Image 1 (cartoon, rainbow, N blue to C red):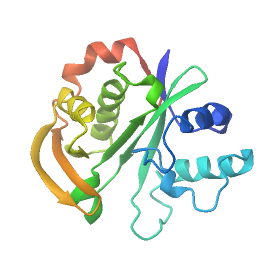
Image 2: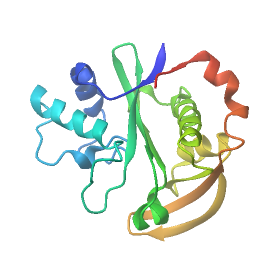
Image 3: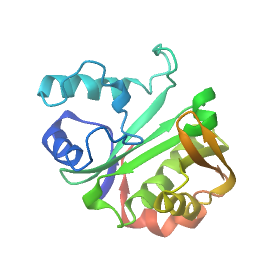
Image 4: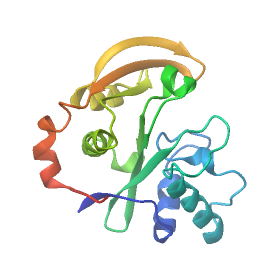
Amino acid sequence: MTELIAPTGRLHYSWLTAHDEWPPGTHQDGAGLRLVADDDLNSPEGFASWVERLRQQSDRSLPLGEGRVHATHWWIVDGETYLGAIDLRHYLNGVLLEGGGHIGYSIRPSARRQGLATWALGAVLLKASALGLDRVLLTCDDGNAGSARTIENNGGVLEDVRSTEIGVKRRYWIALDDAGHSHSLMAATRTVAS
């Protein structure tokens, strides 16, 4: 059964297998890889250290480094198989307002076109509402039709397409008072762990 879980060291091998599906240097939205610092993600210790930082990023009592915002990370899994990642940034800084948004997500290449991103985004929109947000910004690369469909299927309304320091981005807003209604059937077929 597909579900959202907090990052965990027990999925180290599955995460590495998924990571190998992306071309080297490819950015994986929502995965929190920018928090890696000097960790060797191939070693169990380095991976565990990174996972702990992912989990701590949601703790608003802890200070963050320059340019960082508090965020909650989830992994999209089916049993012990890592399928992707999604994160919810609790607030926006200038870079996120311009081109990053509140929510980032990525699905491993072998698990795409199964509705996982659409489902995970719908589930995280409910969590954003519980966090007190009344609308969220989502962005995607201008040429990423699959991600644009995912956002639009969750109620995204295109504000604009603009050049940013991280590329040309489509910028969508989703009002959260309507987010849970259109996805009740999808939510019933999958599990969301807190």
